[in-house]
Length: 173
Image (cartoon, rainbow, N blue to C red; front, top):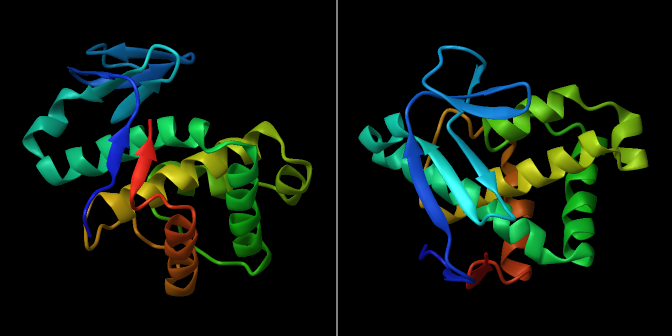
């Protein structure tokens, strides 16, 4: 599948060694905090990637596309974001297991029913990460990855959602 056209203002993308998050802040090369591959700053239009990814081009592609999808998520608009939320809420109701990446998986595991019925912050963060992980799966061109654990039927529904939303042709960032 061809990647979509990226449409939007320029983004700054930079690398830093040994990225981690500690106390809500991105830190580099400190040996402390929870290791992360990347961070995105929507308002600053900036993506910071862990330097280690330079030596792993397929993983770099997957992570970079995931981060670009964060910009697409905020540009979708409320109706499309709600439509995505309805899709993943349906997966939860049907007890679909797995996810399309670690960032969504860890948030999915922390969800309680009240989160998705009340649209809590925890739910909205999961919805965003599930969108970005799915986007990375679909748009980065990877056939497989150990983090792609979502059931086949749910994957097919997500693929249809991206197609119907027109995100294979254009991703507004």
